[in-house]
Length: 232
Ligand code: DX5
Ligand code: ZN
Image 1: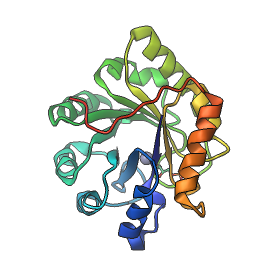
Image 2: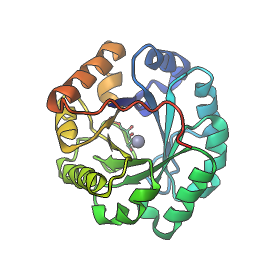
Image 3: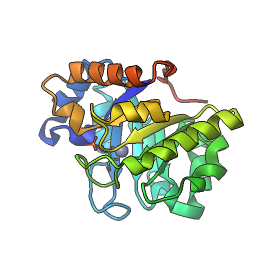
């Protein structure tokens, strides 16, 4: 299981301090939300910020590209220190070349799906990805309410993974907190992205431990997934 605090919920005035706070936890990944003001109605930060944070962190960098033209951003984010690059299935025909490009750059290949998009849209790509990110909010902002209707997609992805003998990890992103992490684990998620719930806690370190424990309680069989280096 992997806990991935999302830096979007950090205090933007103190990125260095916030990154150090995440470093002190046993979270395996740092989730970095990249928004272009077009694919989603918000802007976040770019490769230069990720590069600056990279020099302060040993965690696996999980870069979530909520962008209409990720092809122009893949190389800059690889140079900035991304370990995994996630693009959205809603980009249609652009998806396959993007997955190939990420693979050719030697980084872990991720695909995300928004709440209104049908899960069958990811089916053609499952044997080409290392990670499937099921959005449990409509992307663009942190701190939104969890969309329970997205969970059957996690179950379907887990079933397909088993049936096809594949090994991609399954993440949930958006509204994942202490009250919702259990049902995500039960549905089959093994990577838990969480922003506001973790950063709002008085101790980020204890919050990560608590989230991990709650996920385990709901799915004791959850495999110990440890990914610290990009897949080759
Ligand atoms: C939403 C982002 C999420 C966000 C999650 O657009 O993709 O990663 O940071 O934040 P919370 O956990 O606050 O919903
Ligand atoms: Zn995200």
